[in-house]
Image (tube, rainbow, N blue to C red; front, side, top):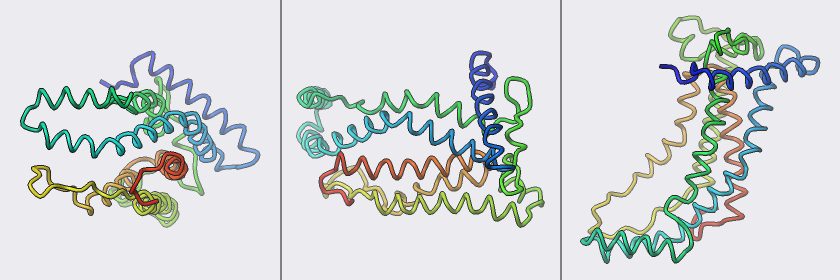
Length: 251
């Protein structure tokens, strides 16, 4: 069952679609044939701006988790063989620090529906029973419904599509590399006899490029959304990292 076909969600998606297409129409005198692409970028920026409070909450939670990590490791070493005592001591630590192990989770859950609806606009060819005309609009002559992997698989890849879609994927990959370099966090000290294996540094680096891989398979409209989102997220995290620094982490 398609969740976005459920009447209340379909109506919400259709409302968002109408707003996006209305914005594209208003931008046409300035942006011409690329008005829909400009609308995608502007709407994504607007949504990310509205979600700044959630980002601040996540940054605070990250700082708290980082600060408590040594104390939690000490509790694990001391009470690791007594799960019930370990749980009690852990919860007491969080109470003493006036926080919760779920700090930062609520903002993530709160923003998920907003992000989900927006992202669905760029993926669905049919919205509330009518065609998604957004995907027929173009960026530099390339339809926003074009998937790089799709045209390669069909054997219809041409130069404009390769350049436009490739540029979007490359931009996302570059932001991923910058994120890896600028927001790198050292792994905590690990005991020699710890049963938990260290996370390979190479794996952490690869994860930063997962969004670029996704962009290869989704429509160009979704790729634009992802490019703007990862760029905004990087800048926002750099700003918040300075406001809520992690002691010992590289900046």
